[in-house]
Image (cartoon, rainbow, N blue to C red; front, top):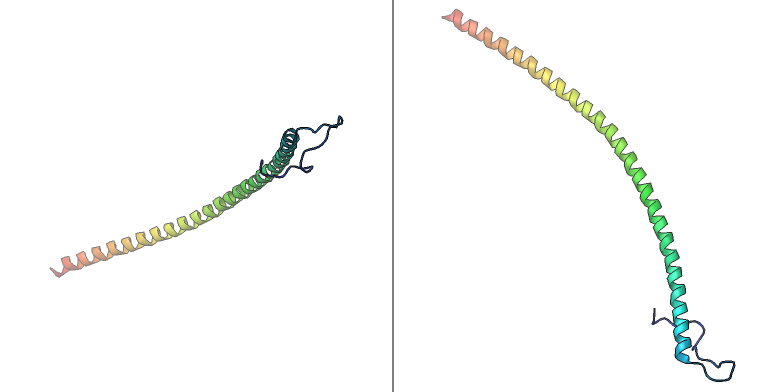
Length: 115
């Protein structure tokens, strides 16, 4: 902030009594006022930025929750589909096991008959 030019020019001047005022004092005061105004402006910008970020964060959270709810619904449907496929595979495996058991019994009885 100190490197910024102070508003109002050089800061030196003549007092009402005709004597020169302290150029260092006026320059310091102008620099301090300029820095104060800059700080207030930056503070206002920061507050606006914070509000914008908070708003965006709330929006993103809403979108995330909505996506999670939709995902859960889809995952449930996918889970049910996978569960159905697994049940079909299990039934098929049981049928094959029963058929194999029947073939084993038949082969065993044929072996016994051949003796």
